[in-house]
Image (cartoon, rainbow, N blue to C red; front, side, top):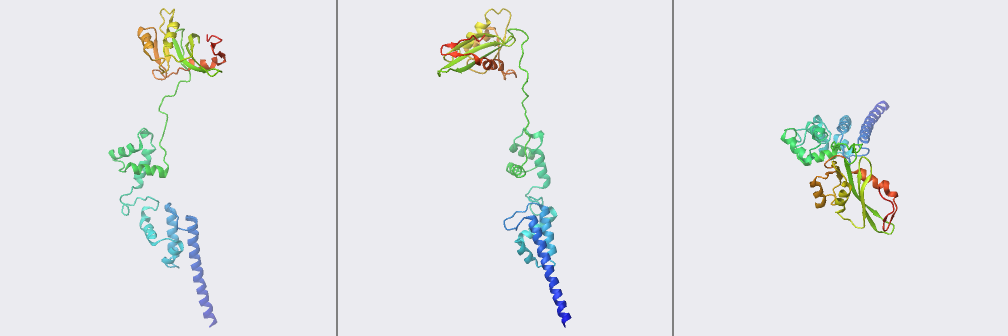
Amino acid sequence: MDLIVLQNEVLALRKRVDWLVALLRLMVVLLKVTGASLNYARITDGSAKISLLRAIERSRTVLPLQSVLRILRLSKSRYHSWKREQECGLDDMPSCPRTSPQQLTSTEVETIKEMVTSDEYRHVPTATLAILAQRIGRVYASPTTWFRLIRRYKWRRPRFRVHPSKPKLGIRALSPNEIWHVDTTLIRLLDGTRAYTHAIIDNFSRRILAWKVSATFNTSITAELILNAANGLIDEKPTLLVDGGVENYNSAVDELVDSGILKRVLAQTDISFSNSLIESWWDYSSHCTFAVSGCSNSPG
């Protein structure tokens, strides 16, 4: 009689041990997958879902399915949905035509990624790229879907510099009076007044050919300086590099250009070079001490 009681106790203990092992297995897998429970956790990795399903199936040999799902806080609908989609993959946004025919397949998602990150389409806006993909028959998805996928997977569109690199060596003249630079700068004096300095510099000799300081900004001064710098020229027809200011583009300067005295070129527009030579001269000549009446040293 004692032997029979002992056997029954052993069987009961074995059953309880199997129950505890099944419970422990479920909790270990649950902790690995979500870190806590499924109440407010969203599992996006398909391999994690498969591991959880396997643990549930192994525990069903000891525990009822309802008890297993209650322990995991996993709803029946969610469990059976995973079971149905298991053959199609359990990653979020799966491509399973039989369960979600309106969703994109994994091949279509890869095609969108390829077109978004491709250098060939870097000049095409994303919304236009979605329409282009439909026209060529690669992916039929709305631009909203494209933007959503880009945000979700953090795809980066290639953005390369399309403008040519600026020359490191500035424009250089081979002889005097070949290239001139003209510019105007504003100098604030110690008493608070302003002095507008206009100058023309020769590219070859770095010599200031004409200059003038005025208390107000006068657009006719550029034409006056051109006439002073061109005084004595016979066969030379210099090229004048200017910026796009009103002092360089007005009727007086246009008249001189039309007369054939010189050729006017807009820096960084007509040519790739800038007008930095005369601009750097302003920095170099900053040692010049200005008084209220003007500059004590000649810019030349």
